[in-house]
Amino acid sequence: MKYESQKIAYAYFATALGLFAIQVIGGLLAGWVYVSPNTLSELVPFNTIRMLHTNSLIVWLLLGFFGAAYFLIPEEAEREIHSPMLAYVQLAILVVGTLGVVVTYLFNPFEGHWLLGKEGREFIEQPKWVKAGIVVAALIFLYNVSMTSLKGRKTAITNILLLGLWGLALLFLFSFYNPHNLSLDKMYWWYVVHLWVEGVWELIMASILAYLMLKLTGVDREVVEKWLYVIVAAALFSGILGTGHHYYWIGTPGYWQWIGSIFSSLEVIPFFAMMAFAFVMVWKGRRDHPNKAALLWSLGTATLAFFGAGVWGFLHTLHGVNYYTHGTQITAAHGHLAFFGAYVALNLAIISYAMPILKGRDPYNQVLNMASFWMMAGGMTFMTFVLTFAGTVQTHLQRVMGIDYMSVQDDITIFYWMRFGSGVVVVLGALLFIYAIFVPRKEIIEPNDRSVAAETPAE
Image (tube, rainbow, N blue to C red):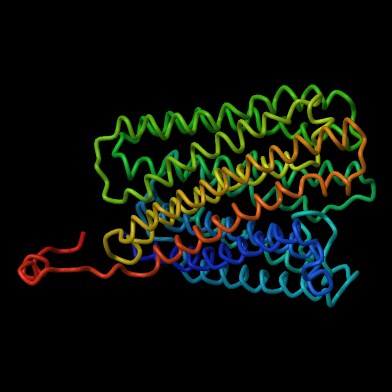
């Protein structure tokens, strides 16, 4: 570790992994409700479980992004973080807000209150006081990292990362605007939801992946930066007007069907470019880095993001197809693999790389770490195929043949059982990852090797 303030990232990564465990366990519980609908229906209804599952996902991914920024910006800027104390204050605000959200969702003590009660907008259900806290935390973060970057070395990686993080914070402000007209509400709602995950988050993803490729492969910075600029240009060109694929059926003008179809079809390009970038960097790389687990996660995130966000997104993005498929299990298939591939795996990649450095020791338990990758990636891939088949059957029976919703749900129960089984594998993989990151491996040293081991310094 070159800079003392990089230790800030440890607190963010540890908190993020705790929420990660809660998120996947919540997802498993939601999957069980699909096969046993009355489970906890009186105590914790399904809509609450789903809110906790999706909101904990968003919060832990953001914590991972913040931790990644606090880890890589000092190295890129060649100076310490402007104010470590502000970074810990920011984390405390986010943790308090998260606890407030959990209490509000579970017990709903302030139902209907304009400031303290939860809102009814998917993914941004947080009470206004929590949203205000998020804005304060974001302002603290942006001030901290921007001052660090402005006073230090400027690189393409930090420039793109800061552009993505500033965009993330500014677009979140639309969550405060809730017009009475439902069509307008949905238009502005997608400014947050779509332009995060298919806009500014892609910039954050590209910059963190570029940093990992730089460190793990030893490829020249100039080569990495050229790839980065191409990826970011493609992401912004396709992603901004690609928002139109959410505007097909919400009461907006018909031209959005063409704009959305054309530009969202192009959203495959930046994800393909990221996958090509990762593999070309490894192919050209001159460095045999000891952290094989971080390299596996880096290649995995580029590959799974291409299939989850790119291919599975394209499957139902054309308006002629989406007319039948929107809101079915095909959407769930795309959403699960896209989020896992693009952002979950990315955070686990930077955590796999950074944690050994933050703890001042060689990467250990790499076999378990890599096993956790194959468990989570395999489980999520199987879940995606299962949900795709479920959605295809659902689309035909419900949207083409006109069979009622509940009857169709009974017909596709077998797919929900398989989805639950794959969820068990994902949860076990997540817990194995956390174990591999935090629990030291017991070294077995033969008696005649003790002197050699004692003389060999840790890297």
